[in-house]
Image (cartoon, rainbow, N blue to C red; front, side, top):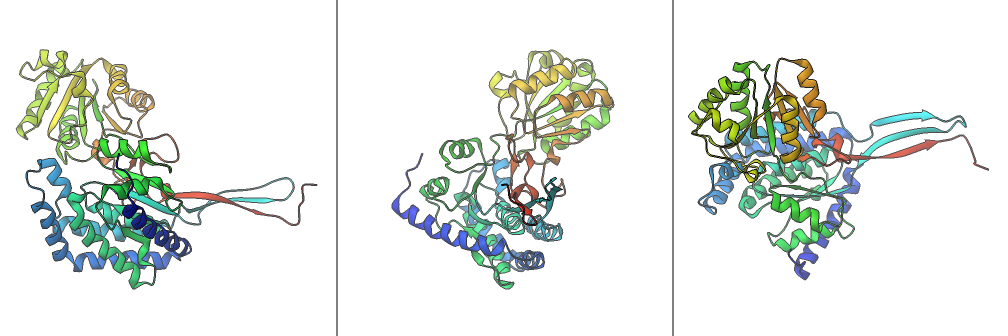
Length: 421
């Protein structure tokens, strides 16, 4: 825990007041104006691509010795900058979530009730190494009519600053307050403490990063938190799986990008097919440089596999490492997931619809997939344009958090002079 210093408190007070004022303006901004700001920001990202890449190079130079997975999260290239720009345009093209009528009804006394979506207000976003979060979070908060204070990790500070400047330029171009999107003015950890106190300025905190960050936020925050602690995702290959599909899906689920929270960390193989299928799965992954930790039943089939401990099965590897267990059918898979999972994302590979339904109904996780890679747990893939994070709690939102999840609601009641008497 880091004490909130006077300097950090003053800096946050300034940022918080500016965010609260900007939130009042953007909450009433017409959809075409918000969309124009996002498109202008996308154009600025493309125009400033060289400057953003130079800022990213400075971040990479300042952090030597990165693991491959960490470097993958931090590095930007022209394709990723273009993806950020397209993401802003995709968010602009989505329906405005603000003002949506969620429900309406009339009471016997003639009163007409309407539940209407409205912005959350000011969001505090605390994230670690991925600089693209700056663009995703800024775009979603703007479209959802809220202001955001972004505090990225020190390892991505230069990149985040360059990206945020493009977003703020887009706001200025259409006459919206630049302070709708603010980057923390300091890397002092005490500023995070000030954000977590809220001080009447922040309505919701969203952490996006490792377990240590999320744990600190959950322990210290005095305002509501929307978070997930870990992405300990499982892929279960059922006895009725198509073997070719299972091999293809598992390769993607584990190795497409090992450092994302939707990467599969544990493979569960039905005992009925493990003797024939597991050696093929291991060979596929090993050829791509993956390492393994396996339980006794898996090692009886593939003796060369290193032994797994309970700690291994509880580890979010975020790297080219996979835990493997052989289980007895759907119930065995569910028991393993209940014991070790983080309620993030689970997948079943099977041609048996009844088995798929039993699995999807039996998990408590935010996202369940049938015959698809766990790496589809992503706001863009859900059609949200982007995401501000993945929520695994049981209140307000679960899974990828997009525009709708960044809104709350209020009631409008229209009468004709009714009194209760």
